[in-house]
Image (tube, rainbow, N blue to C red; front, top):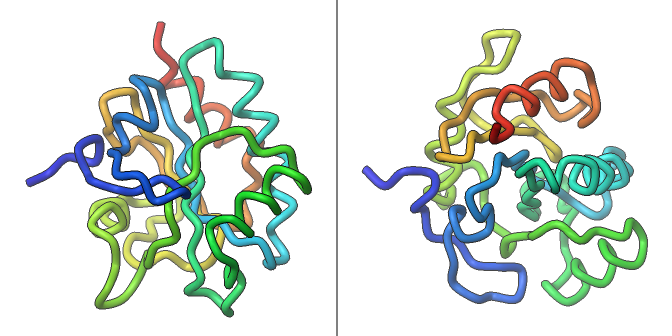
Length: 164
């Protein structure tokens, strides 16, 4: 089985890579994102977390998906422009991918096995579902879309996996 770290993905610009290369041996908050969702303002907090913890070995990775209400219809260039100009996003983003269904990306086939604090496991429920990954790629926490990226439980999960 391919580990989460070794899972092939593409960057938003379509360049082949892996989660390990995007993470660069850092702890990760991996989030499926969308530009036209009521939760889109979470980008502001995600960028703030990325900046706050970067020097301690942390990054956010955004994963655009158009599977929920068609809320990420744009091209890669449009997504990149929106995220950088509207929210100042500097964290890495993958190419748009399916997170549920028959065409679910292998990355999400692994991630959806994780359990959130309420005991939920399985399909991604909506945009902005969050996963905390250790620097070795272990999924250590999962949070529902409406859980704020800076909620105390998310911050605790991030702190727990930051490199020493």
